[in-house]
Length: 503
Image (cartoon, rainbow, N blue to C red; front, side):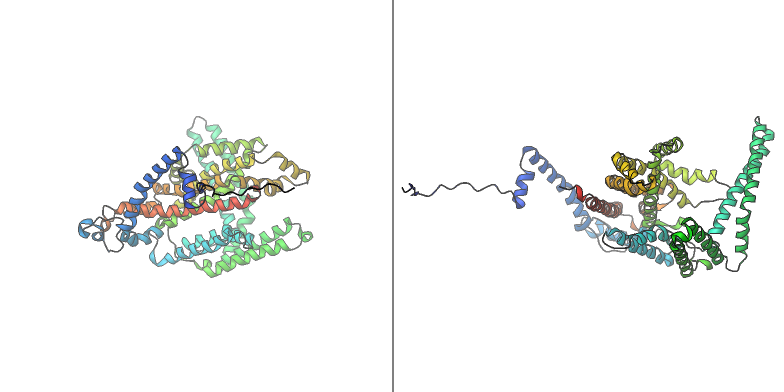
């Protein structure tokens, strides 16, 4: 039996087209104008952009002055039109913004330092490039030393043996001098016997330590008697350090790899000394008071970021330690440094720290600021890292212990890598804040990029109504470029390390 069938005699009525959800129109319909609240927010956002981005572009580009030799080029009454940014001012002061008051004939040293830093940093940031260990060693260990002698200049009068002997002997002399002062003060004090006893004890300690240091100081004197003390000191230091590494590495049972590694490192140090002429006085000394601009900003920020990480890791581990003394010290250190503003830290490091040092022991003003910033930032990093450590399940450490790993191997290979991966946003947020906080060093007579900009405003040759806004816009773009770069790279690293967590 055949099934019935039906054939329509007229066309079906047209239906409305489906709502488009792709492309620009779809994006506008589904994201910006899909609800009354989103419509209101979209309209307010467009108005905000219209009244901010538009005038900014008009000031920086459309009405800007691009060429000129003095303030006359940026005056509206001279040009007969509205005047925006005065970019000739930036062109005239550009070298000052980068180098500060660094002597012009020696600025090639700053350029070379920037170039070396970029050459070592960029390969380390690219994950697929090999030899990350060698690259990191060169950037974090060799580059700071080379950069110091490039930027500051000067040479070497000794090496490891002489430095160690001079440092220990200086502190020992300070102990003896302190004891003698207490003995002299005991005659006119109400607690004279106690001061006399403490002073005599310090003098005795200084005498005993002097006897213990006698072999080291004698070796230093012998080295300094050579015609080339730097090379003699380098050879003596290489022999001592290489022998210790060979012995601590297990001797012949562990092979000669530690010995060869140590000798190669010292050979590289010798090449650097010979190339830079450090045994012959080195380059011309440029006092840090002449440094300024972007140079100081990068030196302070990079040093603070790099030095604060090991400080923060040590404090975070110390705060979680089961040893009461270490835990109490870590907690007190973190709470103290987090409880005072950075301005106070800079003032203390610059003006009060020299009062607590021995009379014959001085520290450069920039170095004092770097130490204060590194300790300050390290306290903040410690809390960020401690949050990452708290997020690691206890089973990770227990599993490592079951495999026979020691505490340090468990921390370095299992726990700490996972903790740092969890807190990448917090760490980079601290790095960005520290980079911007470097502008506070201007209050202790260190002219960073922002301080150098403010100093340039005093030049009457460029005194115009728009000079101030142009200078701050230029420095703002520089700060934004560095901070945005750090933010985007941290996002890349976070996505790469957390690929297994993405759905």
